Image (cartoon, rainbow, N blue to C red; front, side, top):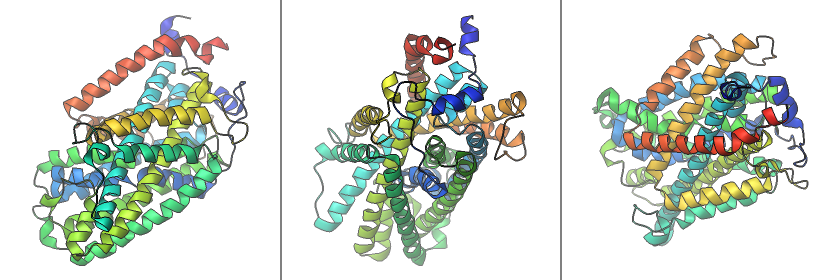
Length: 471
């Protein structure tokens, strides 16, 4: 086999399904314990957090009141990809998500690049969310006790601090919860999801009482470019549906429930995002956004001239953002678990504890790396890097749907992307469009990350791939 043949070698879908349930000497398989409710909550839990509690304050100065349109544009982009994800999740219901989909459709090399982008998407997303969690902790302490943590231990370098200790603490807590078992983690996540939906409804109920139509004018002060720039930033808020697809090995009925959970969760978060964005910019002039990552709490304080609504929101945000860390870290570890079973990363990531039936060592390694990122890297750069990695992976999934429909039309599909091939083609187009809205530093970081990934692949993954070593 030539190198080019090896790089483009596809892993047959049948083999992917068999390998996902096999032990391979790494311990027992993951335990199937999640139903539709848990999967939907996992997807919502991975999405509904920093994107609306924190990133809204960063995106509004870019788009003005048209930040609402930016959320819609990001949602449409996510919808095209979500429909493709739903088809792939119902066809290849394993924990590898888009990495496994790429492996089955366009070859090992592209699967590796996709998996490497997912490491960027998930790992950096967790760190970015953890940074936002620290902001709300400080907001809560300031409101309740007129005290804030010293900047040296509450912010990363470049933002007035030395290390972000609260961000590192929430990552550590998520690790402890995940090591207790998938079912236990799913139950806790579901409870937190219900709570944060209630908190956002509470915010809307108060903010709409101060709604002023004049705050929406001029609606698009920076034109279309401002909207697309903001959409590229807030797209990071929609990537959670990918987390549901990482539960393929732990879902009770993955072929039926994964597509449903993906579509249902995207619909719920889109409605909530648009309502919250409309309520926020209607209640407070858009020029006053920015300068704080706890923007929703600021809106409530300005509207009510009282501290208690901001306290309620901040408590809800602390819990809500913690659930994002939990759900996204879950997805990160399951993708690495699948890559480990394929031999593209060390087998330690695929080792499952016989007692809890979760990859404990995997969780510890991921937690340590993410905690360092959360403690030392500013939120803005993290969010941008997350978006570009997500967009690239999503584009590959859309391509994969088109390829698999043509190469394996015989496969069982519990969900089919409508208007094929228009929808996946639009998915690719919109992903590329938003990628080109990213600024030069983000592209440079993405390029460097890709170069490092290629070096790791040829030094380790290519040599240890089970697709060839087990042949």
